[in-house]
Image (tube, rainbow, N blue to C red; front, top):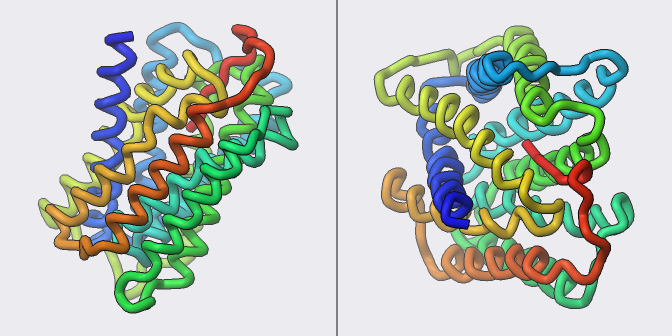
Length: 299
């Protein structure tokens, strides 16, 4: 229990600070270049960890699941995430992205048969109300494309979580993170090269370089190891409750480090989103016990 609490706290700090580091990195790095760099470095390090631990990827018969995870959890999640943060304040983007637990619980009902009771429905409505309240700031001047990108990111992450649940008995968990990161990173790099940097080319200042390193090493490789440790001890609806404070950290760091606006809409909306995320995961309802080979991990 103590180890779980320590890992949870470290994960909250790692992922919360990564929204800030991404925003800083975008000052001198094109979004897709940043996403590809993050994935290739983070995935490469995780692959080394998997190799060192003697784990085998089990590619035979599992190329489909690996490809789907690369599309959802890497191209969809990492690719869209940096684009969303490029259009929004980092704190606001974190709130939208962390609707993921709400989407996961709602989608897990028809796709996995997880229970969906009145408390979960109320929690989902509360979280969505929080997003609506946050959108009131800046006199309504919030990027609609940024909101759409962030919501799409959360949906990809949710579908990726559920995909892992359905394939966990077929693919090795650590490789299910490492291989999609590397494969998805290659795809993102190809798209970035095709699109071209344009007028927003790479400007690798020490500040930008440090932010890229933090995003790849702490926010990707180390954070996903923390996340895997936590998720392999829980279930698809329960695990996310342990990280519902990530947006709080992101909002506070955005205010302290990036001088982002922190008014009453953001404060109230953050409370509502976190309360909603907590509710949908804290009361999972009655269901059968989860077998060891059905334990979920997510990326």
